[in-house]
Amino acid sequence: MKSVHINQMGYRPHDIKKAVIPEKSASFCVLRVCDEESVYEGTAGEGVEYAVGGESVRVADFSGITDVGEYMICAGGKRSHAFKIGDDPYAGLRTALLDFFNFQKCGVDVECGTWSHPACHAEPATVYGLPIKKDVSGGWHDAGDYGRYIVVAAKAVADLLFANELAQKRDDNLLDTVWFELEWMLKMQDEKSGGVYHKVSCHNFNALNEMPHHEKNELVLSPISATATATFAATMALASRSFPQKRDELLNVARRAWAWCIANPDAPNFANPEGITTGGYGDRDDKDERFWAACALFAATGESAFHEFIKASEIYTGLGWANVGTYGIVSYLYHARQFSDVQLAARMKDALHTLCKKIMHEYRIDPYGISLGDDYKWGSNMTVANNAMTLLLARPFAQLSEEYTQAAWEHLHYLLGRNPLSQSYITGFGANPPKYPHHRPSEAVGAPMPGMVVGGPNKFITQDPALKEYCEGNPPAKCYIDHAHSFAGNEVTIYWNSPVYFMAAVLGV
Ligand code: G3I
Ligand code: 9MR
Ligand code: ZN
Image 1 (cartoon, rainbow, N blue to C red):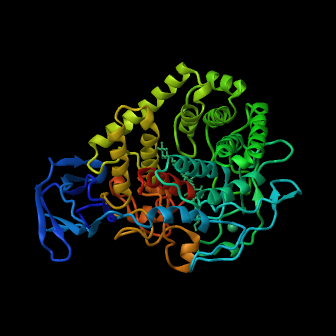
Image 2: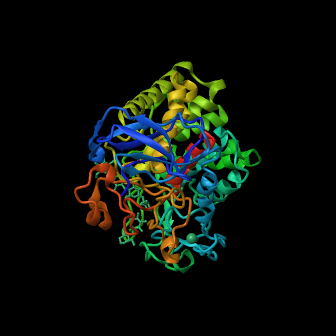
Image 3: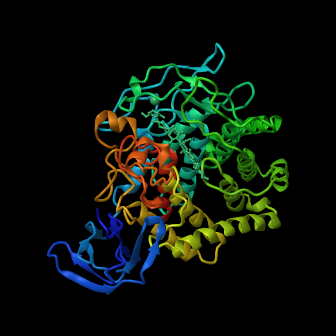
């Protein structure tokens, strides 16, 4: 295994460039690959004891190398993977991150090279416990499994739409890509009550090597939940800005979902009903989802009823699937400006600032330039990307906006290999990407589909059989194994790709 770590895709000529090397070597050199000539010799920073990686390391800054070429870092007789310095070292990455959403399409023929397949899961689903069927075809498969779940769809859509609004250059196909998911979400709303079904899936997960069109078991709509209904309302209100020609329809369904939320203030938290064992996405608290919905609806309409709700609410934060408050804050601060309450806006900025302060504190003391501390849990790579996204969203209200941008870059370098395992966490990219993601089409074909962000290190190693077998005794940042059975570390999801796509779009990758 490598012990000299870099972003395996490389760096642009004028970027800050840092490698992480073992502590025992105080000096390092930069080798040019074509002739193995050393083009730079430098002294690394102070040694740092890095408990979460179970190692002592130094940071080696080689930003001075600006000539285009292919290089390796060497230190103490060890070499990094080869990487590029060039104007477009990340070519193809952003497109692949977005293409993933089209490859995850359900209910239609999917053209995707060796992973292509005919339409799947197109038959109507049974409403749980009732002799009723409903058409809910379409949308994206959530992950390595074929369930389709509303709360995470909302996160993925929001990340992509915010990315589109803030991108240095927009992707032409982004809105078409997102619309496919929105059309499915629209079908998940109950016409009568305005409530939204939590998810659609079979009763149980199918075999790991089964292609989508081979899963033929009965599809079931799990009950309506408050988190699904509120995040649906928020997403539709947000989308009404991106799809002006559909504005009335989207706002209308958002209002109906909101009315359901108001009529059901004490709706129980979602838990899988008896007989359903697929992903639960249960949540202890639906208050932050309601907060986001009110903020998004207020930003879209300017109506005082939504404003009053927000004023009476606590301010919530988070960009995860269970904590979504930051989406609300950003909706309010970016898009409700002409109606907004200055004091409330100031409180929201404070909440954002507190979050960023913590992220920046962890970032500054971490040799790998990320902000997890020791918070390596299921989907840790999402937390890495969400933290970068939080900083990028906070820039207009921050004094340190340039440092925030740099911190976001360092988070991207981590995901592309500058980490204790020298592991790129994106399939198909970098010298050492995941080859065995927990992703059914990849297992069925026997090759990893490219452009997928895997969950990443998870110190709770009893959560899957492969982590348990291979990562016993590892420090948190090294609790990762590139094994198809590792669903708690090596699965992929739409909502892990989406914040990384956000980073790529906003950083201009
Ligand atoms: O945050 C807590 C931490 O405080 C606690 O100490 C620790 C130990 O119990 O757990 C941490 O929470 C974990 C949580 O993820 C963090 O987000 C839970 O243990 C862990 O069970 C939970 O895992 C979720 C997993 O489903 C199981 O429910 C993942 O977040 C979630 O991404 C994942 O989602 C699955 C879907 O169900 C099905 N489709 C694939 C998808 C990805 O694996
Ligand atoms: O494939 C499933 C994955 O999408 C889930 O995240 C994970 C946890 O809920 O479960 C996976 O399915 C496994 C199941 O839980 C246990 N038997 C093996 C399944 C993988 O083939
Ligand atoms: Zn399908």
